Length: 457
Ligand SMILES: *Cc1c(COP(=O)(O)O)cnc(C)c1O
Image (tube, rainbow, N blue to C red; front, side, top):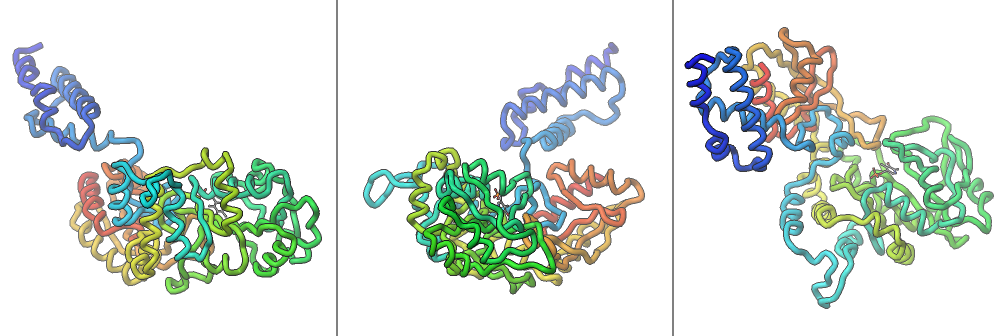
């Protein structure tokens, strides 16, 4: 080894000196690992004579920070350029600032999770949502669990047990991720009684299927599955009347569960949770993180006599919701007390409510930031966004996207480079270009996109 090389190696800063200058937001262990790795690479390159660039301290620190950015936690924030608002693979809902603040306030300290402040006695974690859910839906009582799949399981295993459940053949569906209604009924201990046909089920079909063994009537929202054309199902009110005349509960798995009318945003009519309760359903279940725009949770609302029974089910303990989720759900629901506040602040609603013109304005702004990047072609394109999460499957929202392409890289390579950015950017490829739909990209994410593309080119 030449004297010169020995000198360069001896002059490299020590691990300790470098560690003191690393951004303190990185965990110590991860920072140390990155420092050691970068120093080892530099030593190897110096010895091999392949290191061209200067190796002063700022250059080494920059390399370490780059390494750290690339090797952060496994679960990370990403930028959703796909235009699918409720994107299950990307975590479904992004949460509001108000939710973030409330979770910070309650979850990093002790809280009255199961403590009644008025009496000083033991309380219930489920009590925190009762008054707000009553205001929003008119329900007598509420119970929340880990997700809607858990909610359906708890409801059926409490109310049906060994008995029969009447379900229309048109509603025995599988919902993303192999959640199959027939399997859930069976695993809850119930027996499925299929009524009607795939496209048509009449009130008479339910009536004829009733026996001594019937435990409940179940309605299931078919979510991302639709039968179009020659179809029929009985009115909910009539089905409720039939159930009640036979002292049975009418259970409705609504899937997404709407708290407000989406027609002002150009979407077709779907009844809200409140309206479905008013039509006579006894128990309704829905997700916290689909159109509601809150954390992952399964919300059960309805008659107190049934919910009381569920509270006594041993299974509830295994499905129970954690304090951070509960706090995030309460904060999200609180925004719904004022519809305008909800549309402005719940990201899911805010994105759905963006007009075509809003999307064009955002696209123009982002395009202006990216156009100066040499080697990158940027154009603005009319496109369509999807709602996702099994909601409004055949409905598209008109939007604007920016289309990225380059003579230097193929669309696939550019897509991968964007995906592997410090803040991963998820795009859709269309016409051999990478599309970024502005409906699902926040203004605050523009600088991150600009920085990633500057880095790539
Ligand atoms: C999405 C969905 C479920 C499952 O809900 P998760 O919150 O994902 O567990 C169950 N039933 C219906 C009708 C759905 O749309």
